[in-house]
Image 1 (cartoon, rainbow, N blue to C red):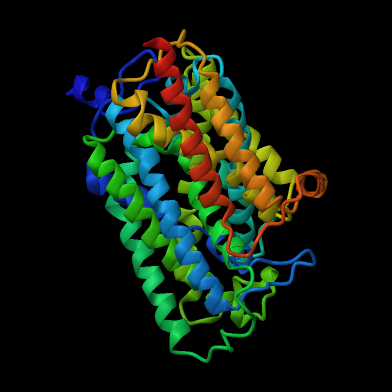
Image 2: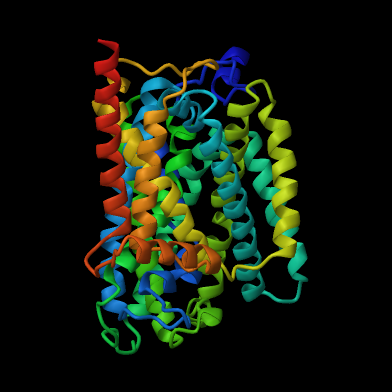
Length: 442
C-alpha cells in the first residue's frame, strides 16, 4: 500500500518518472474547473474590445460570438499543447528542450515563470475582491492570506487535488452555473445588441489569450495522463465548454450593471441564494492559483532539476501572497495581450515540429540537448506578426510596434486575427526550418 501511495503522487524532483494515473474524467474535471474563473466575470469586458478610454466597442451579442470563436480556437490549441506531455511524460518547459535546445529553453521558461507569478498574483487579488463582495466585515488582507495558504496547501499534493476537483468541486460549480443562468435569463435584461462588430477579432483574441495562458503549463498535468487522446480531448472540450458558459454569464452580468466592471459581481449577489452559490465560485477559484503556483515550481525545475517542488511551492505561495497585498488588477487587459503575443506563436512552432517534424522521431529533452536556432527564429517571426497586427495597450510597448508598422508601411485590417496569423506564420516557419535542418544533415 505504501508503494502505491507513493507512486500516485507527483515526484519531488524531475529525476523521478511521472506516474500515469489520470484518466479522462480526472482531467476533464480539472480543465472544466479551470475554465470557470472569476476572471470570466471581472474580466469579461476584455472580449468587448475596449478602446483606449476603456469603452467597449462590441455589443454584448458580438462579444459573446467573438468570445465563443476565440475560446473554441484556444481550446483546440490547448489540446495540441496537452498531447505531447502525455506522449513523453515530460512537463511543459522540459519539452521545450527538445524544441529549442536545453539552454535556449531557459528563455521561454523564464517568461513562463514571470507570467505564472503574475497570474497567481491576479488570482489571489480576484479571490480577495470577490470574498470582500460577499462579506466586507473582514479586512481584505485576511482574504488574501487565507487564499494564499489554501493555494499553497493544494500544491503540496497536486494529483490529489485534481482528484478532489473531480469528486466534489465540479458538481458544485455546475449547479451554481445553472442556477445563475436560470436567474439571469428569467429576469429583465438590457439591450444586448447596442454597439457594433468592428473589433470582433480583438475580442476573439482576448478570449483566446485566456485559453493560451494555460498552454505553457498543460503538459505539467497531462504528463500524468494515461493516454494522449484523453489528454487532448479533456483539455480541448472540458476547458472550452466551461469557459464559454462562464464568459456568457459574465457578459450578462456586465450588461446588467451598464458596463461598470467594479460592480460586475453585484448581479450574482442580488438574486436569492446568490451569496451561497457565488461563494462556491470564490472557494473553487483556488484551483486557478494552485495550478499557477504548482506550474511555476515545475518550470523552475527545468532550470534546477533537483530542486524539491514542495520547497519551491511554499516559497512561491508566500511570494504571490505578498504581491497580491501590494498590487491591483488594473492592467489585466494589457497583461493578456502580451501573454498571447509570446505563447501563441510558440505553440505554433511546437505543434509543427512535434506533430510534423522531428518530434515524430522523438525529441532530445536531456539537459545537454543541442540548441535549435531555427526554431527560435520561427518563434520570433510569429511574435513579430502578432505585434504588427495588434501592438496591445501597454504604453511604451504599443508605441514601439506602432512605429514599426509605420516603418514597414503595414496597416492591420479588421479581419486580421493576431493570434491565428502568428500561429500559422510561426508554424510554417518552423516547418521550413526543420526541413532545412534535415537537408543539411542528409
